Structure formats: C-alpha cells, structure tokens
Amino acid sequence: MSFEVSQAIAHASARHHPSIQEAAKYFTRGKHLPEGQLRDISELFHELAVELLNMPGLEGPQLTIALNKLMESKDYAIRAAL
Image 1 (cartoon, rainbow, N blue to C red):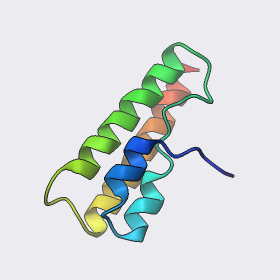
Image 2: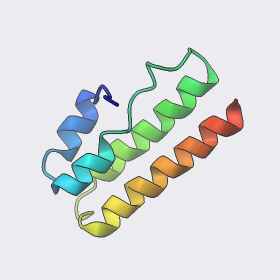
Image 3: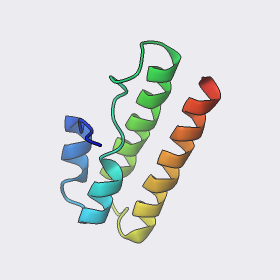
Image 4: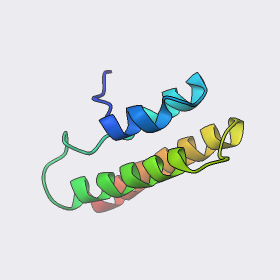
C-alpha cells in the first residue's frame, strides 16, 4: 500500500533514523478521507507527529515506539468516529 507522505513529515523525519522515517510516513494529512470529522482527526495526529519529529533531543527507539503508538491511537480515534 502506498501513501502520499506530506512535505512536513518528509522534512521533519529526514534527519532521523530510517526506522523513525518508516513509522512517520503513515501520518498523512487525511486527503484520502472524506471532508469533515474523519479528515480533521487525521490532521490532528499528523500535526502531532510533525511536532514530535521536530522536537530537539527526541530520537532513538523510544521515538519510533511513540510514533507507532500514536498511529495506533489515530486508528482507534478514526474508528470511534465511524
């Protein structure tokens, strides 16, 4: 499955380890979702992922785990809104 990685995610994750880049690429802006609540939820999680990637000092396996858990939370939030 291919995803359109936003420029914000691509830029923010570029300096990180490939495992972090891999976890980050799934935070899309939600353009694949219908306008409204689902897209808004997706956008919130995208913005938080970008913020985490841009924070100085956040690195390593813990950041990868944080992004994976954030994606899990996003999935549950989207499902809750369905």
